[in-house]
Amino acid sequence: MTTSSEPIQTPAFHHFEITLVLAGHTYKYETEATAKIFLPFVRFQFCYEDRIPEGEYVYTKLEPAGQQNRLTVSLNIRENTLSRDRLVDASLDDKETEHLLAELLYDTLVEFTGITPQWGMSTGIRPVKTMEKRLAAGDTMEQAEEYFRTRFHAGEKKIALCRTIVEQQRPILAKNRRESVSVYIAIPFCPSRCRYCSFVSHSTAGAKSKALLAEYLEKLLVEIRLLRDKIENNHLHLHTVYIGGGTPT
Image (cartoon, rainbow, N blue to C red; front, side):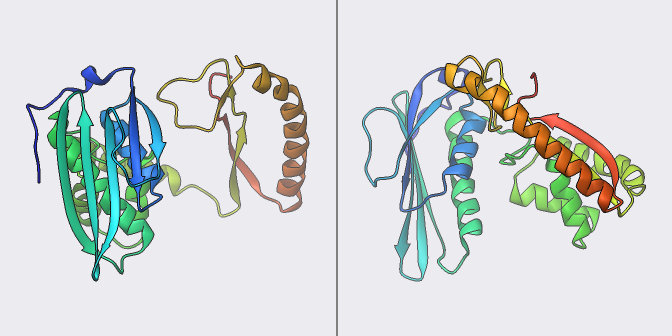
C-alpha cells in the first residue's frame, strides 16, 4: 500500500534527526548510504527492533515469506508517509538481498522527494572503477553502461562521463608496470569533521583525539620505514603515494 502527498524537496530536510529502523536484517551501510543521497543533512538514530518508532522514521524490514523474502520500506517524514514492499528470492546471497532492499528504499525516496539523482543509487566514491571492473570481466562498453543504467539507475550524462574517463585513462593505465605499487598513508585526523565526510576520520577539536595524534604519527613513521624496506627488498617500483583520511591535515 502506498500513501503520499506532493513530493517533498530535500532542502526541507536540513538539520534534524530521523530514526532508521533495520528490522530483520543488518544492512546498515547500504540503507544509510542510500538514505543520505536524499537526506544528506539528517542525523540518523538506528533501531534494530521491529517496531514503529515515535517521531519521524525510515523503516526497513526483511521477513521470510515462504520460499521468498518480503522487503518493506515505510517513510514518515514531516507528516508525509509512503510505504512500499516487494518479494525477492530467499536463496539470494546477502550482498544481492542488501542491494535489492537499498533499491527499494531508493525507489521509495525518489517518489517521496520527487528527486531523481543523476548518479542514481551509486554511493561509492569511484564509479569509474566499477565500470573498469565490468570491462575487465569481459563486458563490452555497451554492457557496462547498461549495468550502470539498470543496477544503479544512473542518468545518461553520468554514464557518458564514466565512459569518457575510462577511455582517457586507458593509455595511462597501460603504462603501469607489474612491479608498480601505490602506497596509501592514512592520517585519520582533521581540524573538524565535515557533515558529508564518509571517511573514518576524527576531529582534533576533541581532547581525546588530539591526545592520540603524536603517538599515532610516531607509530606511523615506524610503519612507513618497514614498508619502505619491503618495497626495496622486493625490487618494487613506487608509483604513487597518497596521504589522506583526514585530507585537510
